[in-house]
Length: 306
Image 1 (spheres, rainbow, N blue to C red):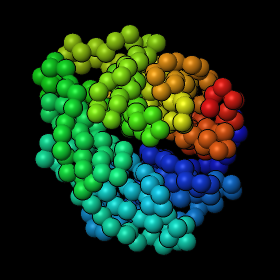
Image 2: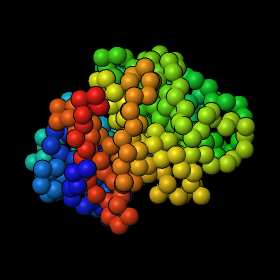
Image 3: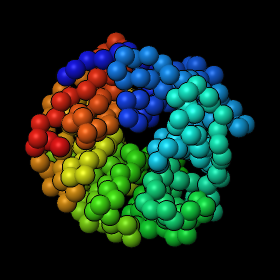
């Protein structure tokens, strides 16, 4: 492990070239998004106040870069705010545009672009758990039903019971990978949102869809992916409460191919909160908790790990 600089508490991160972009989840309500230079740990820009106006956020769920645009999805406001990356790196922080996300069938939690005309979202689209959206972010279809015994639960319990840890998309293979945090499962999907394979964690042979609300081992959250591999942080520990976030930060990274076949496990001594792959640098960047601080570092990947 190559250790780097300290970070404030965070939720979502991404890497663009040599820059780390992440949501600041500390009590700073004036700068919810921060951009760091990964080479020296200096802050390039801080922006995004808490609020409902232009350039403000209440519930950031993901960050995504498409070409030279940064998209920030706010699940509370149900909208994506777009910024030009070059402007942000120059110190400007005014958004270019905002798009409202359709909630006609339910609330999308994570959204992933799959081509110029379609997005896929995970969330609550009763009775299904995925939706396809058009280029204007209107929901056009929903897919894959949630087991009935989960639907019989109260909505807040159902939400937690089928929590998804983001969506990866492999454009060359036209496949998606989704981690189900609280059911210790990784699923590979095609672009028609059909399941190709379900991979259950070593500590949980099959999801407990009995309707009982017991906590299960945490697995495959967060995810990152390369052209040939999927990397999932795996905890395997069972939290004592829903808010027991320490145990959801796994120390192991499981590597799969895009067929869902397990290939290798990387063990660390750190509680990993997020990972991002850089294929060009052959590095796996980590944001982790060392029992005292949130830190940023990276692992040099071997040829069979890329």
